[in-house]
Each structure stands twice: as structure tokens, then as C-alpha cells.
Length: 122
Image (cartoon, rainbow, N blue to C red; front, side, top):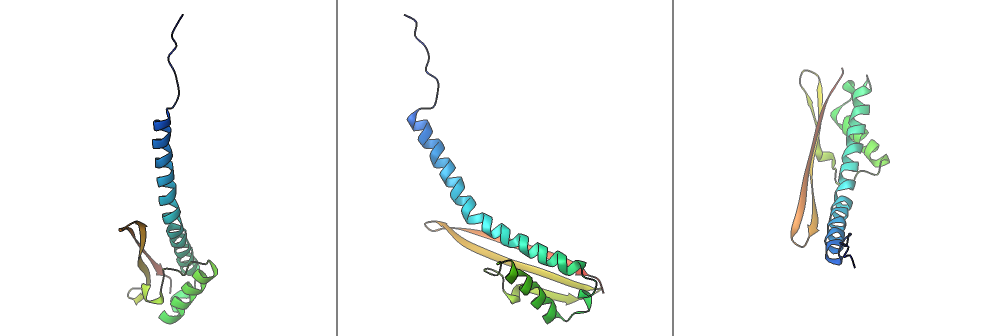
């Protein structure tokens, strides 16, 4: 009688793989919405930059245009008007910088910082 080696994953190995997959899925579910929101910010700022008349707008109108675009994209959860800075030096510089803190597990939080700057044509 010939002995054959067993092949495959043991129950303990399967449990370890399952725990890792669930952990990374949980982390992804917590972080992906934050990056989708940032992608909406980038899109709003790119549309603002492509508009040739946006450099002539007042800072309040620029902020309002960005916030309106984010509202349409359902991306206003973590961004406030105070996070949008408009400076007029050698053109119009628009910067959106914000930080998001999300609880992960117990007392462990994830802090994600986003920063995007564009120059507008005048």
C-alpha cells in the first residue's frame, strides 16, 4: 500500500486566510469612501480650472462653485467651506486641504490628509 501526501489547505490555514481577507475588506470599506470623496474634489477643481472665466470670480463665488459641485456628487461629508482657500498672487490659487479621522478598531483611528492646489487662468 502506497501512502499519498495530502494536498490542500488545513482548517487552521483557512481560518488565517479568512481573517486576513475580512480584515482587509473592512479596512477597504472604511477607506474607499474617503478616496472617492477626494476624487470628487479633484474633479470639481479640475472643472473649475478648465473654465476660462473662473479666474475672475470672487473667492466666495469660487468656494460656492466648488461646494455646489461637491453637493451634486454627494461628497460634502468631510469638507467645509473653511477648507477651501483662495489666494490672489500671480494668478488665482485655489487650495483644498482637509483631514479626516475615522475610527477603525477599538481605540485605533485612521487619519487621512488630502491636499490639492490648482491655479486658475485670469
